[in-house]
Image 1 (cartoon, helix red, strand yellow):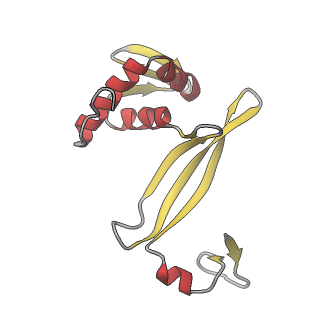
Image 2 (cartoon, helix red, strand yellow):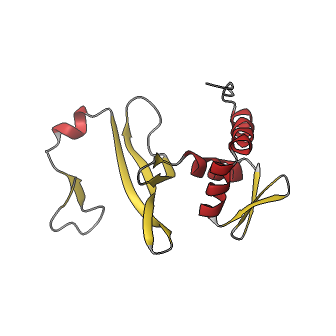
Image 3 (cartoon, one colour):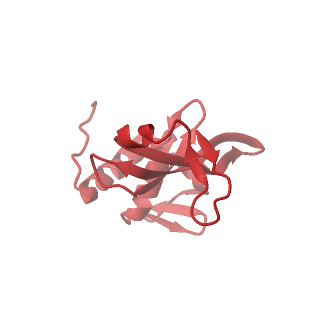
Length: 143
């Protein structure tokens, strides 16, 4: 929960309530902000969120991550597949279009996510390629 400090001219005027003790005792502190709303038509179905690590005693601090939080679903795994697929050059994004193996997946982020939901074999293939390029263990079938 954020509060505003009065009279701060330089630096961030935001602070957390509870005094200094909570800041010292915490092992990990995250700053999570909504970047944009995800809409289907006029209805909001989720939020694009940015998480910034403000303090971390167990790993590297000051890193950021962006992900989709969908209502009634949670963190969108297919949204992460799209983001990481583009990052690792597995998917090609030109304008609003996503392509995999020179075949169009969809126009726009939401239609591409829907395609991956409808085609779990393609999503699993992209997931395996991402894990291979990132040096992570590949998921076994049925696990």
